[in-house]
Length: 323
Image 1 (spheres, one colour):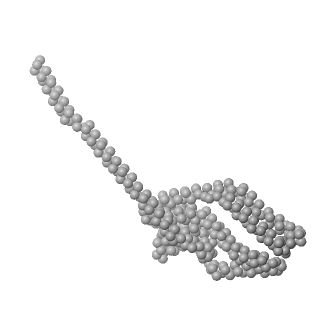
Image 2: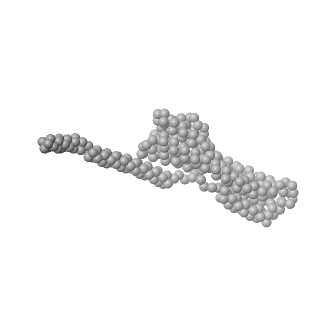
Image 3: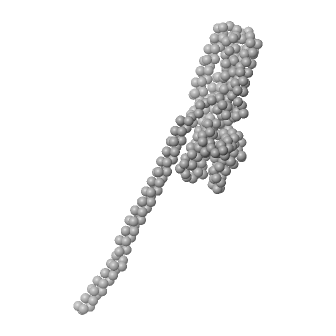
């Protein structure tokens, strides 16, 4: 019995030793492996986060440099630049001034034919020779910018699809230049022509922003400049920009819908005095002619014009929302 018990205990001892030697290191090794994998994954995550942070820093730095250059080299608003922004590239400054002088002279002759005073003739010539042509330039400029903004998001979508299909950026810009109407097609055509003669993309985008100084073009120039300097997925960046531009367009539509009633009221209130005065002049000219023949009447008309101008200016400020 003693020999059998000793033999059993020896077998158990040898079995426990074998078990401890064979399987006892497994859990500890697993724990070591798990700790090593966690540290490795943590190192990879930390490395990836550091790379992402560095990339964001590079993009922010590039954005600051671009904005600084734009602020330092902001071009002056010359007449030539106003004509370019209005789409009158073929009209020279000399022709513009000649046309303005012709309009002013025609108004002076009309005032003398109607036997108006010298002061009225000078004021009318000043308004027609200087104010009216500049107003026409401003109207043409805003109309051109509106047409550009309406088609710009679609142009960016074409660039995104072209880049995703494997075309280089220059070919994508050429597609927009040939397939889109003016002013989008014309602006991208000048952009491609500038790049052909050796101008860098950043400089060409800057010239494009000078001829079309809209917020959308500024966004596009910033995205392209940052992508060229820092790298990254151009199609994804331009796709996000296209979504932002479409959201801005929808917001602008909401603003116009909300302010349409106020604009209609302002137009009615602002047009009532001249419309009523014109009707009275056509029906009973002798009754209202004192305003044009007498000096006191001329001063009253001047005061009314000043007050009406101030009222229209205040109403315009009230109904023009920033967006």
